[in-house]
Image 1 (cartoon, rainbow, N blue to C red):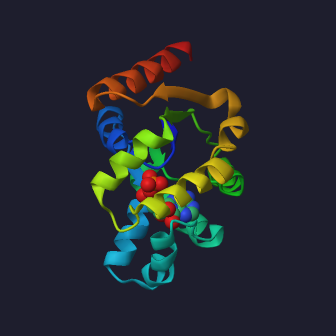
Image 2: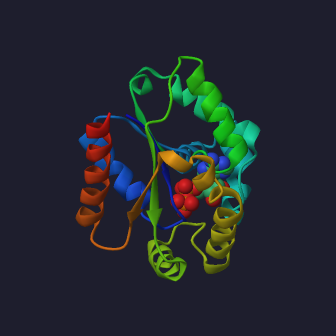
Length: 186
Ligand code: ADP
């Protein structure tokens, strides 16, 4: 399956992606993790994006798109993937469509994780990543509302919304159930 996960910072996308990736047998590709790994390895790309991540702003599309294009071309992603954190705006979504169209592929679904913003601020402050300071979190939420939420209408009929409040297992069950019924429909 080729899936995209969408949800505000702190919705638990990363946590759910780990579970779903195992159950569905497709790689979990997180742009946030890819950037953080470049930063900790102090690669050229890492040095370029570090301050952007610290501010909670978006890395320029040219850098992000190229990183994702290369990752999707790796052999483990040929039959499916779970994209977490990409696309994050409509221009990136257009690019993703182009990358997939090269092999006549398409997304199967876009999973939207729904949570209340104030609930997630608490969760993120508890996590304590370097970009998990209250004002940076608020900025990331604003970026989500302005840039990323429009993807929900962009992908319209592909979107499956999941209530992301509750126990981790409960939420994975909801997501898997929704994906199974999608598979049955096909
Ligand atoms: P969160 O789930 O809290 O939003 P992520 O780990 O997905 O955090 O992303 C952390 C940061 O990495 C973002 O705030 C942004 O700076 C950068 N980033 C991740 N994905 C993208 C993307 N698709 N486009 C631009 N920047 C991105």
